[in-house]
Length: 248
Image (cartoon, rainbow, N blue to C red):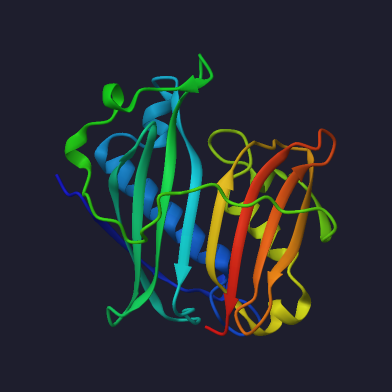
């Protein structure tokens, strides 16, 4: 059984920004595709789990980008289950270019969720230990992220059908896209996220509206922002993020 899995992607025209650089959402989608392929090979993809009234829910994400690939480049994602942390299953990623040079890395934390009981399922009863490779691409024990304080810039979004995943709620990269979109225009035009840390706390479904808020907490050439995404009607916090931006 292969404990790692690699998938290569060609960066296409519809996956880049006005600078012909891969969008952050592009790389996040690549990570999701690679993880899904590997989970399917191991027999515990979302589609496999749904047959047993189980599914995966993403809890935490930490993505680091050292270089943004350009249109026409080939990017390879290598991923593996990297262990357990209490009730959470960990999965890590390495991102390289066509020459094998580092592009980025990521680590993630997942809950195995019982759809009938609406409670976490026991990993030891549903996930074999033998599939894990005890190596982290990004060292992170996932301490709590700080909340986004009130008073920052806010943008509203409506959940569209294209935002919905197999679990019938908003797909996890969409929340990150909503958060990044609130950054000031000079940042969006000159910088790229070098680090994205996410804590998922709730869900939104088709037709609902959310509010994405951003507050800058560090100035300088690598500005840092806190983000919060909230349900517009209930006011509940759905996602908490911290992003660091750079010229990469």
